[in-house]
Image (cartoon, rainbow, N blue to C red; front, side, top):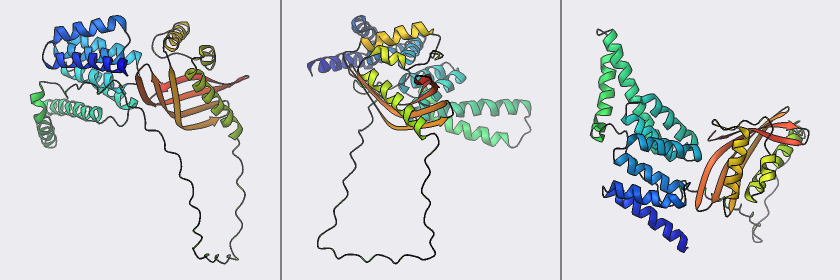
Length: 329
């Protein structure tokens, strides 16, 4: 509890210095904190905001880019990258970043609003170009006027599509609420009068017994493989965790397989405690291939992340192995 309060104070101090316009002090305090905890996502996020408000746009873009690479489950860095790119009129990059934020968290309303503004700007540019080519068009002018009217209230934002709000609390993304246990069926009241059973319909044909799905056994094996992967991750059993990935697994980004394994080992072993829980697991089997989709709740070292995840798997002689892993799919 004391450690958590101390961290909250550190975050609050940096955020307050930024709000007071003391950007150099805010960045210095953030750097001091990060010298001991260089991977802390919350402080890195707050540093990026201080850089952005100080006018150091290139540094802020670099900070949010690295943060999105290290924590691709978080939508906030992608959203703020979209805002920064829009500030620089790099609309295509802004759109790509905001779409990533929405893919990571489809219910992130701020990113949806920002993306709408980006599309409005793209529409304005396209209609303007159309008028340059054919100034006699009577259909384009009303559309352009409407788009400009939509964008007009945003002019006071000084080219920023939306304010870059700091994260709330120490959890970048709140974990999904636990699913309450199903209520037990109510026993019939002893005082209730028995209800007469409806007479059977003589013309009704008996329902055919459902046939087991041909891939039910394979789906069960794939489900077991996913659960074993979750258990190994939670237990910090790196050998079993890495063993869940096929030899042909290709890491995201530009990492080689050996670099990815080294990074995963460092991240897992560097955590004091890890808790991973999945829910809503759905598995589709197609021959020797399977796709598993679920919501994943991850907790470690004061960070709570909830995200959707997809695992693409193939059947090997010793079971199902992961060949591709994606977040937000």
